[in-house]
Amino acid sequence: MNPKQRISYFPLEKMDAAMRKEMERCQREGTPRPESSAVRAHVPGAFWAFANSWRDIFKNGVCDHAIKELCRLYVSRSVQCDYCGNQRSIQAAGAGLIEDDVKDLLNFEKSTRYSGRQKAALAYAEAITWRLATDDAFWERMHRHFTEPELVELGCFIALTMGQQSWLRLLNIEHHQVLAGTSASMAPGFESADSLRQSKSSSSYWAKQGAKKEKDAA
Image (cartoon, rainbow, N blue to C red; front, side):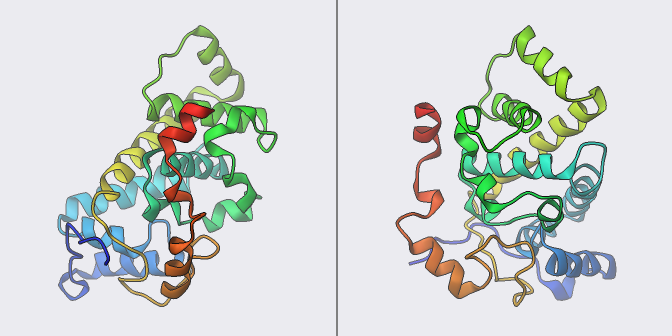
């Protein structure tokens, strides 16, 4: 039995032309996928606030996109938002981020997968997400790897995606329900409704692994 969806999708036919155009972009490009946008569409201000912020500080901006995508996925693993965690940025993949890079996210400091800059970004995401205390050594590390504009953008983006994912995980929304028929920005194994069901039923499905338990063991 599927969990009950807690907030409905706003009907496409009731959206104005600009919102419908943005929904079609979501269908075509993903990140965000159409379902989360259809929930925010109940309030046009919320819809556009997120869409514009996503465009300006995730897709575009001063910090490299692949670093931001890595932090987004770290948040997904931490807050257990499988709706968001089953998406991937096409833009980040084009910049060299590969699926294996997702595997060690909650144990990033011990991993050999990540560069010093990537580990610093993930430490930033960790401190924000888990509300960790920071000291001079932490900030010296941040400033060694990032400019102040990059730290501002990265911090704002981590905060944005953490808040959205912490909320969306409560709503029981699912992929392939709004403007279905596209695999845009879906993770491997989640490209269709059937493959998504199969992947989520597996005992090795990542969201069945307890983020807090894994984090505490790191």
